[in-house]
Amino acid sequence: MHSGNESTIERLVVGTLGEAAGKTALDALAIDARLLAETGPNVSRAVFAMALGVTLFDGLLARVPSGAAYGAERLARGERILFDHGALRTIRFPVGPTGGLPAGHEAFARILAPLGYHVAGVYPLPALKMTGHAYCHRDMPEAIPQYFVSELHVERFDDAFGAAARRVFGGSRDPLGPEEAALLHDFSRHGSVPFAQALAMLPRIAAAFERHHGAVRVSDYETLLARSAEAGWIATEGNAFNHATDRVADVDALADRLRDADWPIKDRVEVSGSGRVRQTAFRADPVEREFLGDDDKSVRRTVPGSFYEFITRETNPATGGLDLAFDSGNATGIFAMTRAA
Image (cartoon, rainbow, N blue to C red; front, top):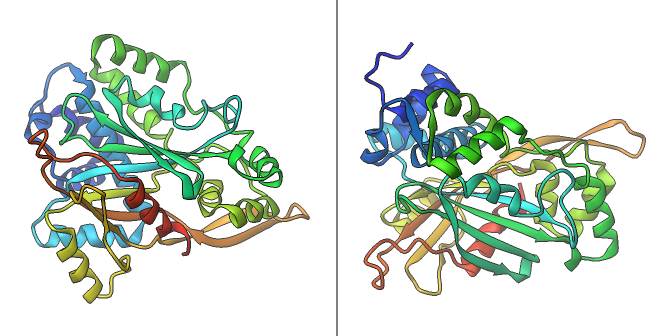
């Protein structure tokens, strides 16, 4: 039972993650006071979107020891993390869906659009044979984390790659059922839903941000990996958060400090064409994943997992607000963090 004093977002996060983990996650993040102030019987799309972000951020830290250690250091300094954006990777075949999932970024458009997001920018990533879609929240764009959803274009690779991609991703299952669809429909129609419905559905919507295909054969993994490190990553990690990003005041100074302290930080800071967006990241933490060998026996390998990123956004003089854009060059440089464990 809640006491009646908690905000809606606290009730959602604690109800999903548990008392201790939920309060720890909320204490770690700098959340806009307007989101924290919401109470009452209904949950707005903005608060649900933020609660989803908190839940996914907590899951990212559970998989990324370097990010968790950095977060603990920030807490010890009495500081909070401003969650700027999370990133997802998807697969797009030349025709049709990705198994049971809608094609490419559309698998997440159907979740994010009802929660108040729109595509604020499309970013070609030709060197990676991918395209990125930036989903920004309509209600509170600077306060609610964005999603950078990239899709890998299978038809831009050779036939061997395409055949391996079909075997690996063609059997993907759809994690969303009728109840999840009903929640998203209600958010689209009304902009809010009753608290009990939101609480029941939050962990199930968060579960869409995971891996949804079955066992991967080593031979198929190697075929994909040889042509695209990004496809190899999706083969092992699926649609899990590729990285989560901390918005900081001075990413260059932070990178220098972390590098001097032997954190696994990228060698250089990526700078956007406008000069207003600067990014760097930790190298991906290694994880162990299970594959099928040619003899159908289980094989375990260490592969790159997810990682933690840092970004500084300056004011856009055209709008007077933060420059919330992304940059194709920056993104390509950040993608390299999962090229080696």
